[in-house]
Length: 454
Ligand SMILES: Cc1cc2nc3c(=O)[nH]c(=O)nc-3n(C[C@H](O)[C@H](O)[C@H](O)COP(=O)(O)OP(=O)(O)OC[C@H]3O[C@@H](n4cnc5c(N)ncnc54)[C@H](O)[C@@H]3O)c2cc1C
Image (cartoon, rainbow, N blue to C red; front, top):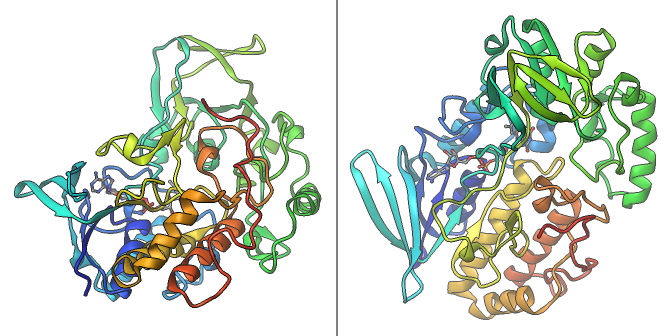
């Protein structure tokens, strides 16, 4: 067992990944979880969970599960109930549950002069203080609602998707959903069966990917060597046109960006319902006035409930922003994990990507574990890793896609480019490959984005 001791904050898929990787590497740690048990947002009873009753996996089972722990179901897109069981089984199987203190919320992290981190938490037995050599932050990215401001005031019910749990909340109401992300579209499908009317207001066009293509879960196709971005965009756009047609037909604006430059919507039920006349697409909101919503094209509608499907914002409230090198909308971290000051904080799960799954998150954890092991057992390799992270251009994690300059896309990565870079860095730290340094063999560049946040 290591001499150094670490804390892990959060027992969701990312925190469990970290716990498992540290356990395998023989590194000592304590876990802290604010909720009653493991599973993160997949536990609908977790007060921070943004799960809802009708939710299922969006990525398919085989591309999402941990490689060493296949899911015990035949469903391609199991429901959140199956998933919370899966995480509980995973944590029990590897004896990770006992490594976490539950109902213990971390309230602050401060670094003392000798570089140790002082962790403060509220536990059922009162406040506690512990010192650690480093802390892994795995407190989730989809918990803190992003609530835009609108002109005027809406006097009906205003709800963010984070507070949406079940379709009964919509029963008999005239509902306007603002935003068409994956949650927004799932909830629109719930709404058509329960609300008295459903409208959806969108600012931009979207690409809709069916759950099945050629009889298989769509994300299981094209699993081999990734195609270059432009070719994949060309081919997949035509496949989508053949299977789902043109969403403009149903009232969506034409996307002013290419496929995969923003997160695609894996839901075509919404298009079926649009085709059946069960809901309507409306333009961007101009202002609220009582129960009336005025839209940018001069039209308006009357609503009882406005549901904001406007996404989430990153939040690490217990630690100084400087310690995480916040730049604009998100911390600027090497491989989305390491603050460039290498101050003993490590961030897990701060990746948005199409189809990275829990195995992708586990690979992040393996990299952290390998670095922590090197700190004690091969300090020269750890030093070389830091030198590359601070002295060389960072690997290009975009896979050649020009992501939209949106808040959510500020920490978006291409799953293939990301996993390749993380594996190369892990291999280099292990010292079992001569030529696998982080970024080596990978085109390095500044992050390519259409708009760089201030
Ligand atoms: C409806 C929905 C569908 C999704 N579908 C998919 C999918 O198909 N595929 C996919 O890969 N991803 C999907 N996701 C994304 C999802 O975020 C990840 O699957 C995964 O849950 C991320 O794990 P995490 O551990 O990083 O965060 P979380 O699951 O959010 O876990 C974070 C944990 O940290 C705890 N915590 C927070 N603050 C503190 C604190 N201060 N002290 C102690 N504990 C704290 C929380 O209680 C929570 O348990 C979906 C998300 C939603 C909402």
